[in-house]
Amino acid sequence: MADRYQQFTNSPVGKFVVPKLGLPSPTPLRRYRPGRPLLEGPALVGAAPGGRLEKTVTEQLRGAGVEIATSATAGSSYSALVFDATGISDPKQLRELHSFFQSTIKQVGTCGRVVVLGTPPELTKSTRERVAQRGLEGFTRSVAKELRNGATAQLVYVAPGSEGTTESTLRFVLSAKSAFVDGQVIRVGTAGAGGATGTTPADWDKPLDGKVALVTGASRGIGASIAEVLARDGAHVVAVDIPAQGADLSAVANAVGGSALQLDVTAEDTPAKLVEYFSERHDGLDIVVHNAGITRDKKLANMDSARWDSVISVNIDSQLAINDALLESSVLRDNARFIGVSSIAGIAGNLGQTNYGTSKAAVIGMVEGTAPVLAERGATFNAVAPGFIETRMTAAIPVTIREPARRLSTLAQGGLPVDVAETIAWYANPASAAVNGNVVRVCGQAMIGA
Ligand code: NAD
Image (cartoon, rainbow, N blue to C red):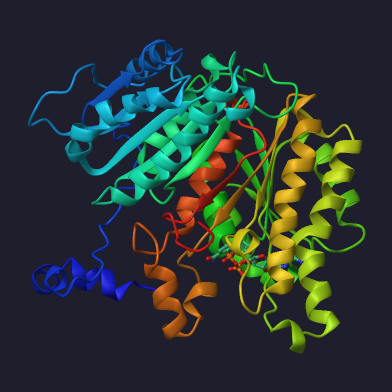
């Protein structure tokens, strides 16, 4: 699983040879460690005239211990550039982006962050404003491609009236927790009823204290990492996997101080068993992560119906049945969180994966269809769409396919299971009530489907 090429590029010989040959040189990404500050250095915050977010965002960042600069100083290095573009109501004013970023982009430090804040185009007041706000997407994605040394850029569209609900998202996109999230567009306050404010956690290092989480497919890979991160954040994790994975499942559950539950998510009685289990053992359930997933690859012309059926059954059908049972019961606590695991294959399609691509696009449909319904009861439904993640699944891909898949992204490397898990933990945060209906790619801005 080790990325030997990345190890080579960061060796003394590699540092000499790689630039001369014009080869990609992936920077080791900064990842979250408890006790470290949100940002290692100052954040430069700017705004186009009339921006409605600058003040709140500055207060939120100061509260999070971030040192704020309000004007650029030549020669300084910034850990983050944050620009409130909500005041831009005409394409001509997009020039404000050039004014703020043209000289400062060179001052973004290693693994630094660029965050552009805008108004969701569909919620603007005029066509010209809509056009301008839509333009932010192309700007941010292009900036993400130009940044070097593991730095990333995201666009956060914040609905009017949801200004106070951005803190958990800012903390995520600025911190090392979003190491492998790049070039993404995030929407806050847009799905459904709106006005959901959530609860600010008493301790931002333990935001899930007192919460109960269900994680399917948790015996290994990404699921095991999700269990670890949710438990680190304070949740009691109930790790679910098939009986054949029983030993690994118990090891994961024990390591995170959680519980193991051997269940096949596709079994007809599983939804009812889950309702009964969480009602009786935990007096409720807060967080549902549908991570269990399988691949059964073959080109469509060679794919038998068993391969098709099994993938659809695990990757989408079982999840809908579980959701229905949970939502019909009274087991869900207030502010519940549902989280799906899609894939880049569900966005861009993939050769040999018609069944998998279908199921993972359907996961996005599940988010789109369920998020507005859940908003009415203060709950949310979001998904992650991982790109190339270093797991046993990707280690088994033939090297000639694996290397391009790993390298063809802005960050030029594979992500780690923890990168997917951190994104899920942001959705699960009680302060993320206004983050609903998102599908964020955890892909290092992969060229595929971009
Ligand atoms: P993995 O195969 O290592 O883990 C999947 C887990 O799901 C396994 O423990 C498996 O036993 C469990 N599972 C399968 N069928 C089940 C069932 N019927 N009931 C209960 N558990 C079941 O895979 P992974 O790489 O960790 O992937 C986790 C999720 O992320 C999957 O949904 C996958 O499609 C998705 N994903 C992975 C990548 C990647 O690069 N690894 C990329 C995109 C999406």
